[in-house]
Image (tube, rainbow, N blue to C red; front, side, top):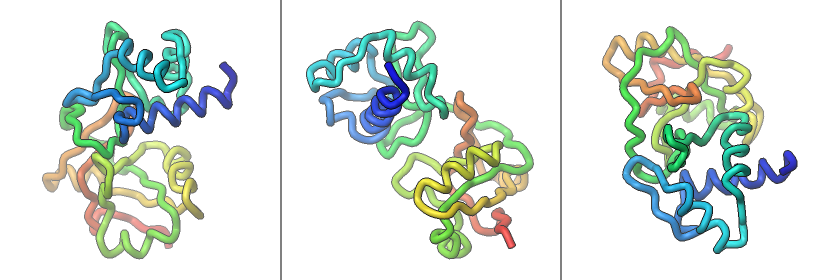
Amino acid sequence: MNEKQLKSYSKFLSLVLRHQPETIEISLDEMGWVDVEDLLSALRRHRRELTLEQLKEIVRSNDKQRFSFNESETRIRASQGHSLTVDLGYEPAEPPKILYHGTPEHFVESIRENGLNKQQRHAVHLHTDINTSMSVGQRRGRPVLLKIQSERMNAEGCLFYVTPNYVWLTDHVPPKYIIFPE
């Protein structure tokens, strides 16, 4: 499978495992999991055939590690980013002092007023890595890097969760915890 095919399948898997499983007539359980065989069968029925080895390659090679298997590799799910209601089962975790969020410049004024909201997603996504945050922010415009005072937020009662691919999740980031660039 070449890089273009990997990217195309990865985007399609993001759609069905995070937002619209009904696109290929599958159902996710309450924690976002689906049986690998059910997924592969559904993909075949919808002319998007993948082998188990190709699926494993997609999971392994995804630059943001968006997907994960259970320990026996019989079930798969998206690690975060769901617009569907799922309980990912992550335990609260103590965040680092500062986390980052990249956003398009045209959202900054709204964020100054309302903070970071999860919108249609399951949670607000934050990162320890500046480059990752900036690449997320530039998907829809000129990126702006926001610094989040996550340690202070946590000390004041806000919960954080960390995914297996080190994306930090929280329900909301109030403006008072955001350091905006000058």
